[in-house]
Length: 251
Image 1: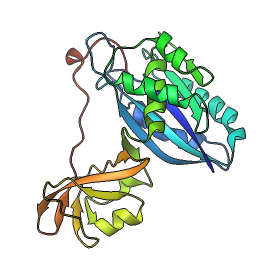
Image 2: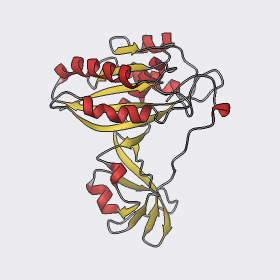
Image 3: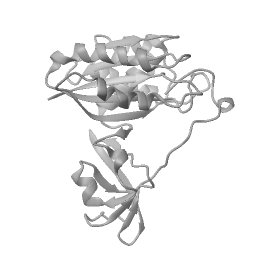
């Protein structure tokens, strides 16, 4: 199997009941036969007064496993149709699709890293994605910036958090370290004393299990909560109120 990275950005509006992350997760149902989703990763981009966004300025990348690169053109076509069907009025959706062996990926990775700390333009995105599919599907087309960044950051293997991986949303609020490891999620302690979570110990997720993409794999950082009990950091955030957001749409 070979991987394709499908980046989506800027598909919602402030009144929407869904964001780009949900649109990205829905894409699994549109994949060609023989292809499957390895994971869906959310990427956080720079929040800056000159960048329009809806609530948090994030984009999403679907990591697709396909039999070979011949399926890529079909995936691009299906992703474009998916975006055009589900992107909401007032958004500026963008799509980026690359294969893991694409020679242009290193430049796109560099572009993605820059998007976390600098204000970049559509021209910058198009230059970084030379030879890689990048397309706008309405509005100002500003979504091509975040879509390209999502692909670059996810392909780097060291950025973002999983919003889907092996049905992680169905996992209970508390489960054993061994259960996470059996699901392919590595549990890593952030404790300063270097404690190591044992297989039989418990991890409390607070109903929000979101492993990080570290070293090209899902990793769940945890902190000790008590004897034999660990807690994963973070929690779900709601959308900001419209008056607290900048004008425009994002993911």
